[in-house]
Image 1: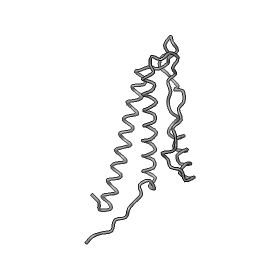
Image 2 (image 1 turned 90 degrees about the vertical axis):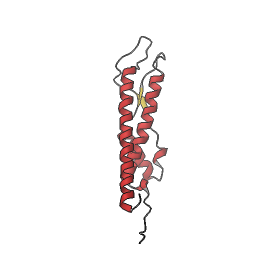
Image 3 (image 1 turned 90 degrees about the horizontal axis):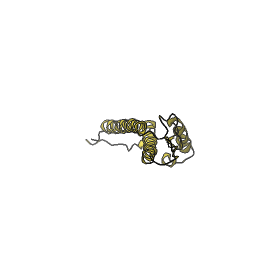
Image 4 (image 1 turned 30 degrees about the vertical axis):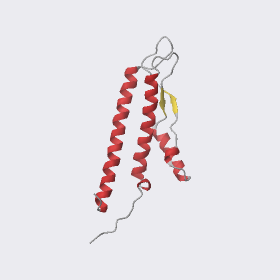
Length: 130
């Protein structure tokens, strides 16, 4: 006997929204961190970071509430605080610091992606899909 499978829209489930938003925010942060590393020798370059995830989440939720899509929500960049070092030419990018932050960021992205994938597999298993 064949069972009917419902087509669940994953973006309507809050966990999937949260995981997707987290991955989008982490990807944007990784880009900013890569720009910092690329400009480590640029005179007067100031290290940048992104606004916290909570601020991004609030903007994303507001965009969804008004009918916008979360992928249209942009991550704002700000001057990084707490630079480890500053060079004589005014550059405050510490490669060691940026590398540590980028590594932590990559780990958080992998975690969010794995949670998203496992939840998707759980829904498929529950609905009889393999």
